[in-house]
Length: 250
Image (cartoon, rainbow, N blue to C red; front, top):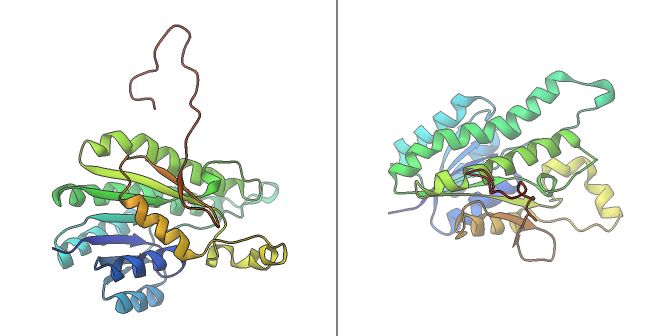
């Protein structure tokens, strides 16, 4: 029986690299992207199923999972990868842009987890990997709203790790540095001229595959050029004096 994966933001960049990597290993892929032409083209290349949809809309995730169920009868791996940069100027605040960034980067992940969980459980369990960023672990002054959304999904992964593990579903995140994808196209020349190394989408795809099979749910893999992916370790926070941490706090 073939393994089945659902990948969002799959038409290009990291999502496309993950689709190619998994399909080369025999995984059946269901691909989702707002770019209908691009996602259809890649689906034909990897012989998978595709859906042109906006992950900021809850219905998109439900439709994608339903497609996996109809086409393949199961779901084992979910890569919630779709994301956009912030570019929200606090001096000239664009409320519509702000809402869109949060909707794609945060709501899209929440909707994806919620929609995919029942089929993952019915399939015997599986794994969810979210594409976060180094900006989900540290402060990035270059794009504060993007930084906020990536911190949010890291918090979601950490909070869901235990309850999902009880349903035989692992959840984790990859936190790559700057990656040579359409997301950084506008600033790519700046990085190159400064001699700053960029990750390739294939570098991150390899880390995503590793994250799917991480032994510990809630693992956050840091991905940097020239280094193997390494789990991020939080220092922890002091508990109350003379007492224990509240139940469920990790």
